[in-house]
Length: 374
Image 1 (cartoon, rainbow, N blue to C red):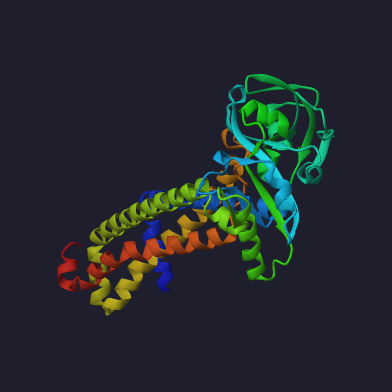
Image 2 (image 1 turned 90 degrees about the vertical axis):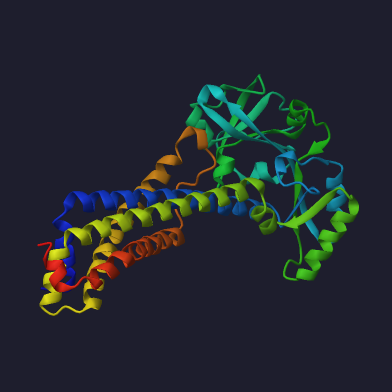
């Protein structure tokens, strides 16, 4: 009889315990994957969005949350006039709640009518914003789907009704779940006249790190209260991303630790119940190392099963989460392959760690003493 066949039959002989162990570990794996996958997806999408629009981010110095940043919009033309600057995009951003649709974190962006962002998105229906469009907004397709709103309908923002003049689609999930209005309108609503949240600067000569640093210094010399950072640096240190990243890893570590304890308990009980069987195997000539490998093999088989179930649950869960209204515009709906590979490796590690002690104890059983439990 093959070695792995014995391990499989041992597990199949206790279907309820094996199934509960697999499901417990699978849920832990799925939870960790969803948390880490969503966190990494959020950061990756955020990075892609900013990379499409600029190379440097200019915001208020010392700010960790961009939404709270406030810069005089007169700074934009001054930045545009610097050598090495190809394009400057300034805008205002805010988060609002659309309680009637159970949406509590919808991004609102204010742009100038000639802003490239408005021309980069694809209009699904209606038209783009233009000068003089007071009381009018564009909304992303994802937000339109979640609210059931169409061109010509009204949507309430800041306790005021706005007419939807266009529905757009974007490569960024954040834009697809957002609201666009004219910058001047949003400044009035937020009581921040003449202010923007920050600037995205498209630079020339990015192949030369020294040129980039010099441009950053030239921008910061314009105003002692602003800072200029590269897009990757800005996204990596963005407050919401840092909190999400830390929370995901802390909760995942707790889940993995509990899974190791659960696997340890399962394998210890398995070894105790099969003391007689292990004694028989030792009596017919099985070495200690072979007994250890048998217990480890059983644990690894459980882990592989749990990893397969957990990965499946995580993929389905994240895809469903993408359409859950409260997180509209923040969840991509897919899990990176690196996270899937890490999940399988983590499951195997849990299986090995959870079986080391039981495997050692099984190997130390003396044949005569073990067979007394028969």
